[in-house]
Picture (cartoon, helix red, strand yellow):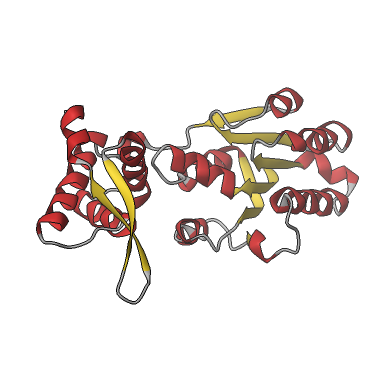
Length: 244
């Protein structure tokens, strides 16, 4: 019989790792891996859900749990996710009869080195199985050496349109805007290109950010008649020609 499991998810870290790869967290895949071996009885996702991109993924999370902790609501400025995890661990282990502990597991999706000591206690002293799962490249050495761990790919490259295709669509959008005498914003451009290419907006935003860093796109501020400032972008065509 599968062990019952407490699953604690540092969703902020996971989301940012996926964002860096130009994708969104593949929650279904990771939860499927967990369910293949364990019986999750409490699944807790923790992050600042006031951030729009993270908030947009809540419907995906709700397919697996309704326990979503918005750390922005907490009265702690420092390490609120770590604090939440400690609370969850203490409550879960403390309320469990000793004879039940071999039938339970704690799965933590995080890579923070500060979890090494408490998870070692849970695994060695409390006698509850521990597994750390973490996006590749985000697992601390201390945590890897302390308890069993498994790294997984945070991004989903198989779902992405080629970066060059998206880049060309960004340039086409900026050219159209320029020719029409309109102004382009970062968000609007990314949204248009994401819809046109059927790509995740976070992927398009990453490519657009890279284009800004590389000089192909410039950011500038324009002041309107009423004194309001607008943050805009435009193509740097001289740099674009150099890169071709």
